[in-house]
Image (cartoon, rainbow, N blue to C red; front, top):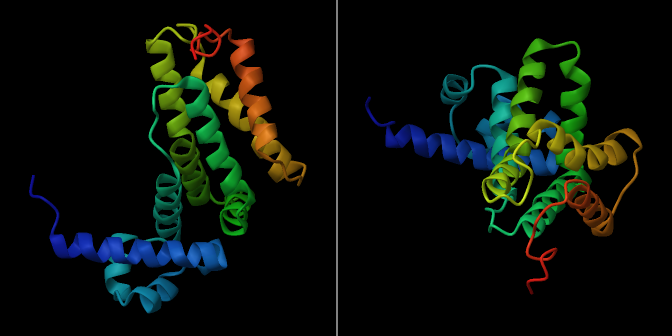
Length: 197
């Protein structure tokens, strides 16, 4: 398999950087091929070749935004969960990403393409927590039979419900409470719980 053309890679990266700026400034509504072309200087023809549908462009841009916001796990279960959920909290309170999430949820019920994008973004947005949980299971800090899907719901669910359903803001103390309740529920064996400083 031939490596990608460096010019294509440069065009894609430049376009996504401009698209992410538009997402932050204008929300999902600003993510059009025309707007990205004007901002990046990349031709519309190239953009349509890379992302044929508007939803393809939206998915790539928000996925990049999520990826850049995430931190790599350190191996400290409590600290890693707090960091991952603090990042989710920040995105839920950032006007552009919050609005994009609301658009995805609203339109996914009627538009199969948006439903596909929402599913892809759900996987991307929860990937770090899934990795943290899987690593903790491997280290025997969490039960070997832990249902990771359910665990993701228990960790992310309260945050998304409070912000997107109840329309309430929340601080890092709330995130801390969610993580501590989860660890207590699953009797997690963390350095903190074992008395190791």
